[in-house]
Length: 305
Image (cartoon, rainbow, N blue to C red; front, top):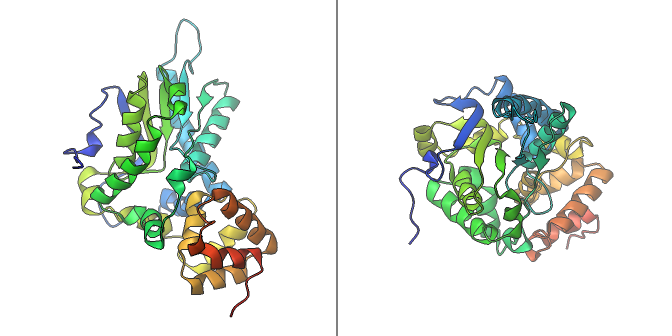
């Protein structure tokens, strides 16, 4: 039987694990007109301007952490620190793009810390049914028990991965976008504990106050989608050459109804369609009979019968 700990947000595994965020959300309603909220939806889909906006803010937090931990003997504030983000398969998540950009910004400042990018395998991204895909795509609406089941399914396959050995005896800074129930961090921390990391810092844009997160886990969905909640605005992002399509970007596209999918395709430039088709093929999960019609439309060889 799955054991849900009394509070996943308490990070019970290590005393040297700390959470830092740009903003903690403690009450409703959400302030969608505020700066962080305005930039967030585009960031989740991979818009470069928004990725850069948040990366600069997060890199400031990382710089503060590194300087606090500076090795006075060697003068190397980076020491054995490593930056990472949640594991991905082919297409990165927004968190992965943030980690890459933060790492690049820190290198420009002279810090020599490493970037590690754990990967998922095909088994972890496979789709067995439309229902299974919808559950994954709608993770931001999920209640705590469902989040735990989904993360446990992935983590059971990740914990034995040899990639984890690269973190052994390192100090880890994990970049992510939002902390809701703490489920993802809980399982990632468990995995890192198996290789005896020295220190863990978890950096987020938003952190929901524990009680609020448990009562309203769907807040994540609202934050993700409030600024890009119509077909035209979504199509504009898909067409943008400066957008690095994230796994969330494609999963949102393939989760659209067929009527909406037709409309989106009609608004896409040929180059954008070709790029998305290529990415969907590489992501593997879309090479599935349940997405056959969408893939044919992207390829431009769909014939309606």
